[in-house]
Length: 144
Image (cartoon, rainbow, N blue to C red; front, side, top):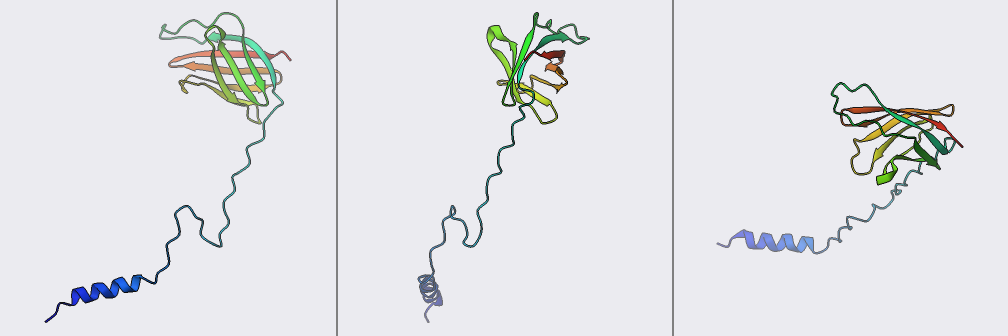
């Protein structure tokens, strides 16, 4: 008696010979619309300009925080994009984008936990610079 397995295998192979090729994984199924990317948010430009002021150390219970930088510091905003020159001598800056309500969070390029957050309103910026456990008050006035 013959074994039915070889005959069954040939029948299955013959059934697959008339199938069409599967579409590539990158091709979209027919009849569906492709997704469109959302437009980028519009830039808030009403706060554009130079903001100059001081950074002061908040009360330090650990007594290990470095003193606040001496002299004035500057945030320059162009097309809603802010650059905070925290230490111009070593080119330490933080960057961020101003929100419609005037709020912002600017962060260091290398360590995103070193950041300044605050609010632009009525020609004044008030915020807080954080570096680890150390916090500093930031108060700047719009110059132009």
